[in-house]
Length: 357
Image (tube, rainbow, N blue to C red; front, side, top):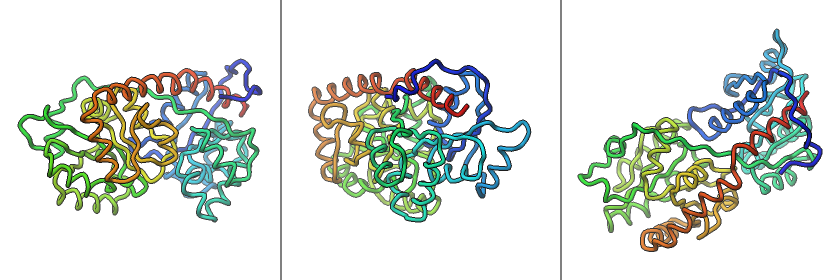
C-alpha cells in the first residue's frame, strides 16, 4: 500500500507524540485511535491520546505541546475536528482522514479552507480507502504523494459472559422463544449522518406481516437532540427497538448472535461495524453509498440496498437463500483477513511516525 520511499527499517528511537481524536465513547473513531496508539507505542514511542473536544483553539494545543518535557510530534484523526487544532504547533504532524471530513465537511467552504491548510502543513496523511484519497485530492490542495492508503485493521473480541436473552429483554424485546427471532442489528452512534430512522417505517410494516423479524438499534447517544427524536419514533413503532450502548466486547457478542448487521448511513469513511460483522461471520446489509460499496461487494461479501423497500427485498433473499447467506459470510471473512490485517496496519503507522523524526 505504501510508496517505496517508506520501505526502510522501522526507527526504534523513543519519541513523545500527542494524538488528537474525537473520543465520544465507543464510536468507531475512538476504537481506531486506541488501536493506532497501540501500534505506535509497540515501536517504543510514547503516545498520549487526547479528546479534541477538550481544546478550545489551536493555541491551547500549542501550549500543551511546548510544556516540559515537550511533545516532538503529533497526530490527528479527522482533518477538521482534530486537525485544525494542530495549525499553530511547531512540531511535525500527520493526519488521518475520519470520513465525514472528506465526505461532508469539504462542502462547507469555511471548513474546506481550514482543512486545506492542515493538509498542506501535515508531513503525511492517511486515507482508509482509494476513494477517500481521490476525493481529498479533488477537493483539497495537496501533494498526492503525501496521502497514503491504509485500510483499517480489524480485531474482534467477543464477551464470554454475554446473555442474548437478557440483552433483548433489556432492549424491550419481550418474547418467550428469542431463538426464533431474526434480529437485524443496526450498529451506529445516534447522529443524523448515520440515519438510523431510514428503515424504521418500512421495517415496522414488514414486522407486522412477520413478527419474528425485529430491528434493534444500538450505539452511543452522540447528538442529544437527535437521540430524543429517535427514542420518540422507536417508542411508537412496532418491531423496532433501541438498545443501551454496550462495551465493545458485548457489542461483538450481540453482533455474533444477530441474523444480520445493518448499516443505513448517509455517508461513511470506512465502517468498522461492517468489517467487524464480516470478521465475526455475520452477513452485512449495507446502504449503497461510496464508503460502504468500497467494502461490500454486492452478493459476494454482503448485500447492498438503495431504498428501504430494497432493504426488505435483500433481507428476504438472505432469509430464503441459504447458499447466498453462506457465500457472503465466507467471502466477507476472507476479505477482512486479506485486506484488514493488523500487521500491515501496524507497520504502516510505525513507518509513517518515523517520518516525523
